[in-house]
Length: 122
Image (tube, rainbow, N blue to C red; front, side):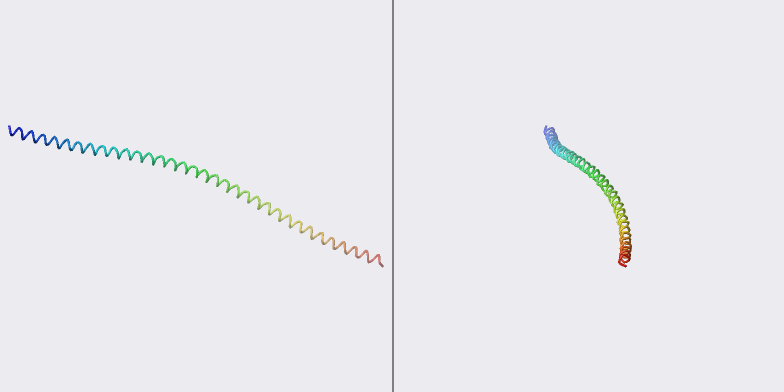
């Protein structure tokens, strides 16, 4: 009877240890589940942030393209203005030429007038 009691006690002790191990394993499992839930939550937050960043990047790319378009149109306008300026410079040079020829003609007319006055006075 004492052998059976010893065996029963040993089995009871083993069952108690197994129950304790089970509790410990259940605790570890629950802890791992919580960590997994936290990891999933963090992953979801990171995915959301990634989507936001991608949206911002797409917006920046669109703005960059718009800015490039504006820059190209400004270059075109600058070239047009340079063309107008070159035309104005050419016109100014022509006008100066006309003015110089008018001054020459005026001097010639004054010379003729002075000659006529001199002839009239004689």
